[in-house]
Length: 427
Image: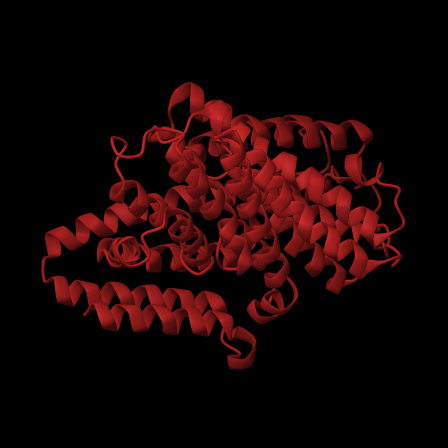
């Protein structure tokens, strides 16, 4: 049974990777894969009560991520409908792609540490649509944004879900993880940026033409700034909401979405119906990419089967027996997270190693935080940020593999060496 589940999972991922040659939408492949995996698992388990309990557990975790994704995408659409991103784009004056790449990479890196890598990717990829005309340029920037967002998210407790898991579990503390993983994460970003800036050379920025607004539908400076500031404040304050209330992030994003909806209705309550319809949050909900959301559901439910069948924990134990060296094992876990979601991988690691054997802030936990957080950048399907970018810009798996994966691997290995050198120097 485990062999069949493994083969089905590989087949589903292959279908996603070969979306364009097969001419089958990746969302369909993800949903079929999830359906087949759960069907085979259910027939083998032959325990409806346990099966439904496990499915409900997986669905709860999936729904939390999907609700958060939908909320963040809707907020970005509301800001864009009000031309709110002009608050940023109007201040970017560079005419060279290489300079813009450095600016975008560094902003994404630090913004991801404050928000999280998923939200930051949604915001920055959406912003690139307002700055770049050529699709090839936007795709390249989206790849760098994924690398920068995952690198930035790894060094703070709220920047990446795996670091958050380790933080909540007591494996890492706030100050120690920020102090230890910041430099490796920065190296993870700077190496790809240095290579791409040389490749881009002096290529100019080709900006899209200003969008033509219908008469009477142009937004005022007040509306643009209000929606931009309020939308970004909601995204930034979600981690604060989680810390203060203990509620999951999707509750914070939905609460903020309600506030943004109310403010939008109040601001536009006296306006004519045509203008109001274009700017309301209800219309923004119709503009989010539901195909990307459905794809995300399929991927998460597929990975959940691997978790329930203990395939991932079995692999982890096998690595421990076969390899033995901590640093090599964690490096492999990071590479595997490029294919499999890093959440169950980190969960398996937390269950495999105890705090009595490896105390908080030890080498193992901090290195796992770095490797699991940044290894997912190597493939487009390896992280929530990559999946979001894939949906927003319709990035082809094989294009990312050819153009971005090598850069991400360079950054990953460079940052890993930086962490190990830093650790041995300090200890």
